[in-house]
Image (cartoon, rainbow, N blue to C red; front, top):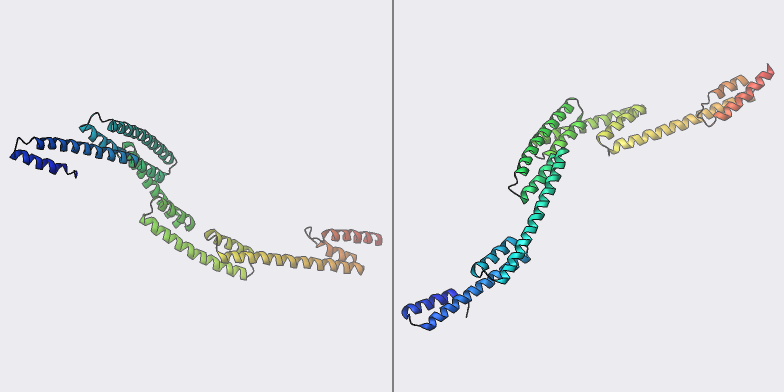
Length: 310
């Protein structure tokens, strides 16, 4: 009654040893064995059902087969086995499709030289199919090529360093680190390049400021743009470039004032009947000046007067 079938059977068996003719004990043993069998079947069936509902298909199949070993005609176990095997087949088909999709994507990245991504995708293939020899061989090949690519980038970085092109050296070292983040040589190279770039930036800033102070705005501008190539957000370089623009605007305004004074000098000479002098003043007004048209008109007027006087 408590479901302790093994103990009950053992106890009843001992009773029969003492009294082999005890028919009630034999009947109870048979009933206990039958109930034990029915209980085990029910337990396996419920386990199979639970495993299936949680997507643990292989375990559901195993529990169903355990029932069928005891009761080959059990309809519930047969139905569960059919459902579980169908689901397993569907998953296998889907798994094979996923493997092919991942493999093809890996090949695409491999063909473009993106060996790191290709390896990542082939490793996902092995997660789904650990015995996939094609993925294993492809990973090995991609790693060789990745190593070759890293070696080539390291050679390029060193050449850039020798040429003093620290920006390109930095870019190459970082490409190596993108392929192999733990590469010690690339880590040291990146640090070396950053230090040199910082030192070079400071030298350029100092030179640019000196040129600005001396009034050599054109050369200072060139230097400050070099700083921005190294450090695009450098506030000092941006500030001085803005100041250079303002200085040029001031110079342009000063030049405009000078031309206006020349224009007025021409008018004064014209008023004093010094027509040739007036013409010489007005000829100094350049075509891009707003006074140019007036100056040309006045030159014509003065020339006409000179013709009459001659």
